[in-house]
Length: 50
Length: 531
Image 1 (tube, rainbow over the protein chains, first blue to last red):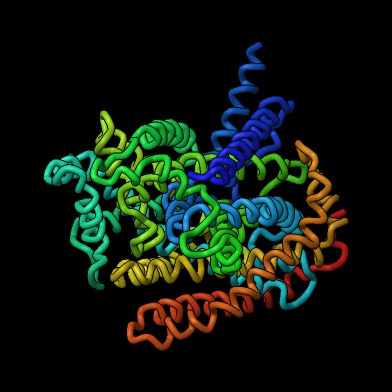
Image 2: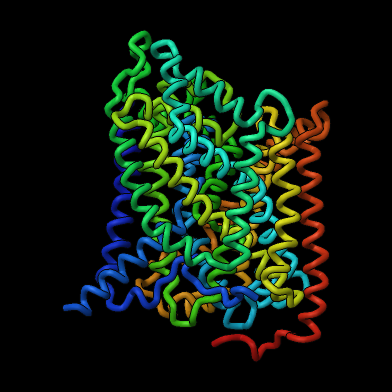
């Protein structure tokens, strides 16, 4: 593993972990975020059992 | 206080739902294969550049365009494109956004079967028996042979009875869930399954990182050098710049980003169209991307790629398929773990569930189109699609020699067409829909502000970036691919591509017919523009 490799790994993994920390903390801190955020399969497609 | 607890529970529920939707085969199986087949660490440079310059921007663009299309009254992707760009040709962009997920579904479902088969092998003790029969340090040969036999990689033909039974079972399970429209049920289940998968994956990564040099006869194949293969930005025998000038490397990296974020395949566009006007799209999209990248880079990549280096020496072997790497090398770590059979069974079972949550959503764009374009009920739409994807899946299963049919579909549809649709969508968003309208639209209900440089990236950087890669690929590689596919004696790849073209033509005709209905019943006027 070269020095460039170590730098690549630390920067990349660090970026991903920071992004996760930022997003998850924003979701938890923002008032009523659970009312306005949706995951695709949580969205009602209005076509059930037709 | 009780209210506070409820709120926290709901917020964590949202995070788990986002994670459950984001994680799929792309993270744990496709990504490691892409890194291994594209030279290791050199792949990570275009991969991260693509994430920042096109992945996250297109993710936000799709959520925004989809929600806008829904407000105008369209849930199908041809309709959404029609709402975004008032031109008779716009709806035909929908050919790509419907064909892509339908074709990906055809081989995706077969890989789900592999996961199920491996989970069963661990439960039944078959893998332990195989490992016990291997000479010390030679278990990888057994796993390679097992995988090749399972998929029939030696010759074309349908696999054995057990595999065909599992194919039928997986098909039944998928279509039962889609037919009944009970995606929320499986999604609730995945809220438990996904955290479990992540915990299991963390344990596996820790074990991989402590493997040292698993084969004493080859001390150079140790974990530090394995991490070097994944992260050193160089390839052997070529300079960094020469390697980076390969357009296929960039196309594959961008394609992987699109595949793993489930963007540029119509799925997000379609689901976003059902959102309310004040639902957030910015934090939702970014959180899904972040969790997805954690699973992909920190878990999937860090477990499979080092193993592929230590046990397969991926620098020097020709890999059968992008998806085969993980199936071949992961049993080596389970063999070297306490409770390895339990971890193996749970890991592949959880991947199977993660894959099902993804595959259910893949048919939704086509279902929404048939419902909206022809007033079909959900059950009739699903039945028609089941027929089409069954034919495609049987083609992917039958032409199993070196997994050529599956890999052809994955490269030309899962990479190339996805890339083309991404290019069209970003131009549509930045130039046709327009930055000013997009700014107003995306900010509705947004829980976080969009960074200012995003708009410059969307309008100039992303389109130029994608067009440059596309032009480079066409100039440098397309003629070679044409010869390999259409002038070689093995006609499988040509046959598969002809089939994909036939599916695309079928949807083109349907879109033409649906377009005529829309013009009669629901012509879009300037009054439909949502302020």
